Image 1 (cartoon, rainbow, N blue to C red):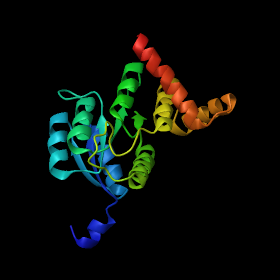
Image 2 (tube, helix red, strand yellow):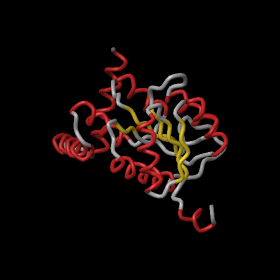
Image 3 (cartoon, rainbow, N blue to C red):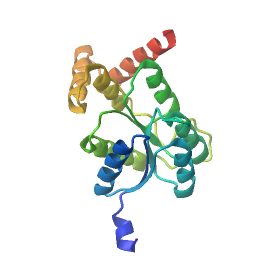
Length: 200
């Protein structure tokens, strides 16, 4: 890669999904958007590639043969301090609780198109760029905390079969009804989901 081409790359992303079609679609879309992509179709390869290439962000499917996306996320967070987002068809209470516990930047609900993924990735890079640099102090999260609004939107998308824009409008409506900010409403919704997970 030439120096000019290297400067044009927006960032390096590891994409992990055991569905080859999803993997091809996401990697192609993000490459077209200007990102350098490393891809893997299983958790073991993902961890090896992360160690070798040190991506700035990882997009992880959750349910895969062998190591799950949760297993990969723990390694990325604890061993390499690489932030991550989840792509999943599931948003049951236990999954949401685990996503929050791990400290994901975002949670995107499948089916997804690249038009939804690219803005989420760009927002994650913007947040990571604004985050203070990692220090030697121990931290339970990756470079930035979970975006509660992004996660709540993912829950609403799954629960009500909505596209992202409509789920965001629904969250805004709920917030307006309760006279609170979307972020506060998102935290409230996620707390309720987590309570359901604990009592299930």
